Image: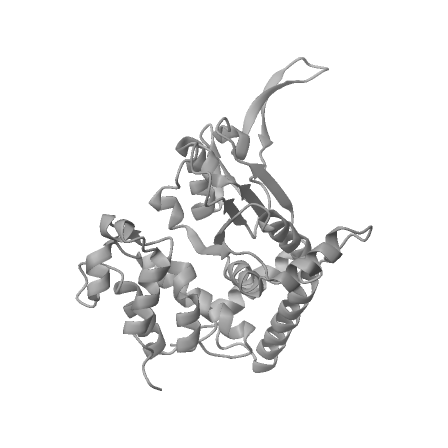
Length: 340
């Protein structure tokens, strides 16, 4: 079905796609000046930004989670703010609050809203699982609605708006696991691992001298919003879309397509939002790879990072020390891509 967007002049569309690829390549080049390795992680964060989705970044201390987020904000030329989540953080510390101000001339007092750090383009929610659910929920409306409500007043957040949250997989004492409703709002759960010996040596060379590496901005907020529209215009074939839906439905215990491994180890599977994100992220990856259509490989490549935080395992999986990634890898083996 054609729409006014897909009926654009071919030359204009080609120019937009060429600019998209040019900016994407330059983002990679600039980020690599600061971040060593982690190509797959950087790709997933870029997809999140081009889709307009939020990312949860899970990694051990010292794996450059915070540096990665700050660098991406610099490269995109966006307003960046950071919240360090702690057990005593209050919802108003995130959203902002009303204060009473007195006019020095008339002595008249009025309520004035003071914006919190949530009013940014890129919000780093550092160690998000260290704050209680009441404060975590303050982020929920912002992530879904791109707005916040304070004392009954509705405030729209700047566009684009991304939450890039980090969490530490160890030191679980004193942490508050994110509720499933909030986890489902994240496009990706990105896992950061240790670098290779050669990459660590390069990090030492970059960070232990007087030289300070910095990334330069390569685009603007307005252009990034245009890229997000361009991604949504990327076509996807019916067979590829059906394959994406089949993979997501395979994680649901009660679905007829669910394999035995899911019925044995999974309590709850991926939501409809998982299928939406899987298709949308695959569209972004296709454009980034220089293609004008989504392939089965795009779907399979993004399946695990999109689904790993959306399936809830049972005690059988826990007793056998199986992770969500283990289950999802088995599903991919059992559900190969259809032949073209």
